[in-house]
Amino acid sequence: MNRPRIGFACMYRHHERELSLKELKTLEGGYNPRTTTLRWMDSVAVEVAREKLLQIVDHNLAAQVHLLGYVAQLPPTLRMLRLSSDLLPFYSHPKVVEFYRDPAVMSRLEAGFQRIGEVARKADIRLSFHPGQFCVLASDRPDVVENSLAEFEYHADMIRMMGYGRQFQDFKCNVHIAGRLGVEGVRAIWPRLSQVSRHCITFENEEKTYGVDDCLQLADLAPVVLDIHHCWINENRYIDPDDPRVAQIIDSWRGVRPVMHYSQPPETLQAQGFDPQQKLEMDELLKVVNKRDLYLHSDRMWNDWTNAYALQFLPRFDIMFEAKDKNLAVEAFYRRFLQPD
Image 1: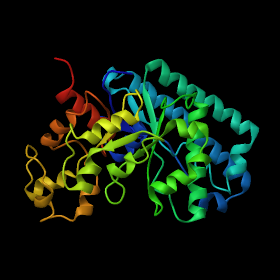
Image 2 (image 1 turned 120 degrees about the vertical axis):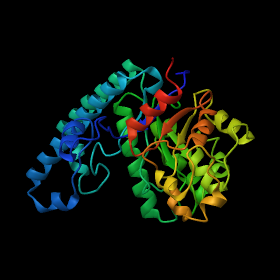
Image 3 (image 1 turned 180 degrees about the vertical axis):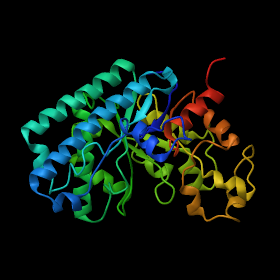
Image 4 (image 1 turned 90 degrees about the vertical axis):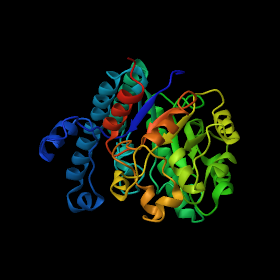
């Protein structure tokens, strides 16, 4: 796993974007997860809800195998994928927990996830998860902490069934520090995380409160995922690839190739006069947009100054792209900057 990789997150986008939405949904559906709502499940008979949920779970596991098959056909540099967190809807919810504890259901889950792990390992695809923003391990509310631990352990269960979580960072499961208790809050709940969770968890800097320096305070526990877009917003400047903190981040991975995240603000900035060949300067941007507008992700990587900047990290980091066009954004970047002549 020493060669550089770039990857995309969760969803597949079909290449022929001129097709109708119905046609695209049909073509993409076999790769992407489905879900339902608790409201609908509560509105029907228990057996009807159970059967529907089982169909969704079967579809989602098969879809991940299908998606991995697609990634396996890409050049080795592109074999990196963040799996969706929505594979097992409401897995940690009290109303649904008994469904997933059913031995027959668990047997299907174990077989499905084992297949996902086998396909990924055979094709040498680097996998990850990223639990949602409601996973707030450092909350000052005990109920939120309990729910967050359950949500993280849901991801750990999927990781374990895939055959990962057996050693340090054989699988990445990324979260933000998040919560009023911050670094000390994370340290307080650390012993309650399972061994699989502790093997896989990483902490990523975010835009507002907990930046790179905060994450480095946890580097003795888990690796730090550098998000260069979040860092730019948080610090109002681009972190230099030679910043001493970058070396500390690499060290936090303990010999495993580090992962960083990369995104750009929306392409609409071009209509406001920002040249795709020029550096995006925070002071100039804030004259015409709200800072929160910069949190949003672009469809593709439209600003070439930022692309050149991100490429400076690639010799030492794998890069997870966070772009709305998913695989299309990553493949376009690869063709422009990384594909051999």
